[in-house]
Structures are given as C-alpha cells and as structure tokens.
Amino acid sequence: MATLALTQPKTVRVNRTQFREHLRAKLDEAKGRTVIEISGVNDEGERVLLDRSYFDDLMWSVRSLIETLEITSDRKLFQQIMNAAATLEDDTRLGKLHSFEEAFPVEEE
Image (cartoon, rainbow, N blue to C red; front, side, top):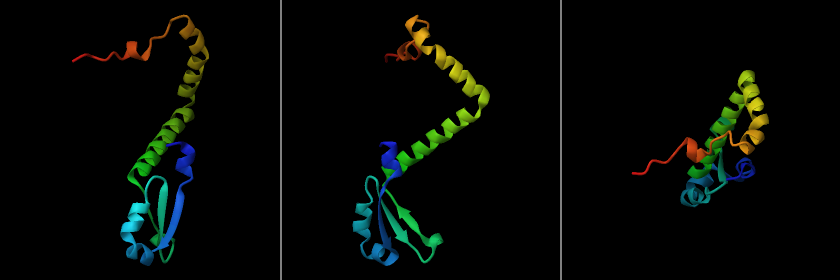
C-alpha cells in the first residue's frame, strides 16, 4: 500500500452503543484503509478498529522509518553510505560490482 494511503485512512466514527448494535456490520466495514473510531466517554476510552493487513502495512512502514532514522542518525555510517553512493555508477559501468544473483545464488534442490 502506498505511503500516502497509509497516512490518510478513511475514518468512520461511531459511539459504543452504535458499535455494539451494529457489530457485524462495523467489523465488515473495517477493511482496507477504512478505520472505525469507537468514541468513549473521554479520550482514554476511545478505541480504533482496523483491518489486519492495514495494520501490518502500518507496522512495516514504522519499522522502515525507524531503521532509516537509525542509519541517518549514525553520522559515521551515513557518511560511508554517501561516499559509496558517489562511486556506484562508475563501479557499475566498470564491472566492479556483483549482481544480486551473483552475491546470493539460489541453490537448486
């Protein structure tokens, strides 16, 4: 799922009574990027119902973001990556790099 779609879900707001009365319909409605917000008496009592695949996509994006932040916050590592990136085109053209298939061959069974 595209990042923009992950950050802009369709939200359907219901109160707890409506949710209980229409439980099956609301569970079915929470598909894709449609999120059901169940209101509570206060902010602490609010709940959110969402599709498992949408949740998995959100978690994958969060993990990716954390990994990116960890890499970019490590100045030494990030500088090494940037230095290597500057020579990638030339190294590729000169045949100094291995393809993914060469580096990680698939073993035949």
